[in-house]
Length: 373
Ligand SMILES: *Cc1c(COP(=O)(O)O)cnc(C)c1O
Image (cartoon, rainbow, N blue to C red; front, side, top):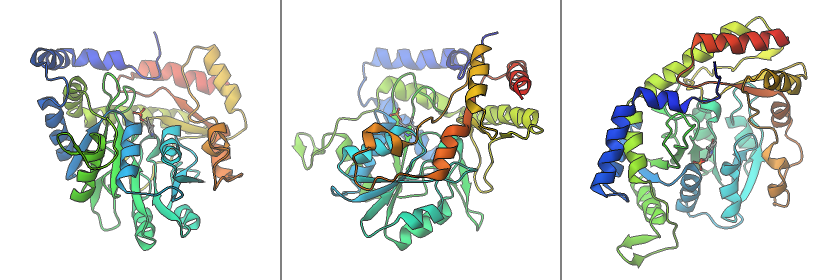
């Protein structure tokens, strides 16, 4: 039995006919760029997310960059970002000459909170990029309240939590990525809604921001060969759109399969005091992009080696906090100590989770973990 971190080929086999037909249709149509499939997928995703505008782009990093460009920020403006995330989130901030202000996260949800945000706001703060890490939505109600109070724009990095639903105190529900001013996502193959190559999208309910970001993604062009501003070239490929449009129909089933696998792990580890299984936040569903637990006895690296020696895939997301990365060391606003982020980088470990998990596979994994403790 081969155990994998993600089983993309198993997932493909179940819907092979549908996918193959859609891909062949695009090839035969020769509408490779901005073909009808791109528009179809855009509309399906708008409906699924209940958001006014989806702007398909080439990948999740471009989506973040175009979102920040759309806000019209100026060099030196501060953008608050959690230090416990994938590099892309902070990279685009620095790339645009903005100042990333890296902050800590909550030790249970690994996400930004309203309190952490409020403490980091200065007169230069223009935006915040909460990341819905590992599959659950950050506490957006508090974040929105504080951002509004200080006139700070919100770009949600929803690369890892598409399909996660957030519930407000009055019972209103919204999809992750549709709560702030702009949301972005990635359809990198291993993400919860994965293409067969690079792909991404931006979401917003603002007509004005949508127009601006569509223009930026298309060379700053307002009408053909008339360029109003400096933009980029970031398009979703028609073949990827055709694939994504099919996989979107299964996204909720995929999330349910991931949740079921997470439940199995939770149950298997519930009596091991050294393991903190993922804490599920009260106001967000969890779509388990990763099953990331904390090893609280200082033996995370030993467990990592033990599992590797038994050929059980596992990963450390993330081993180094962003503020300690060489690439960010020279930036203004640098911090030198974020206790929760530092602790998480030493304690977290992620186990295989995907849509094709079986109890047989999970038993091998959980038996190995249990035998370590
Ligand atoms: C994957 C990811 C991105 C980048 O997406 P790409 O499509 O690989 O460019 C950005 N932010 C987070 C949190 C991610 O996990």
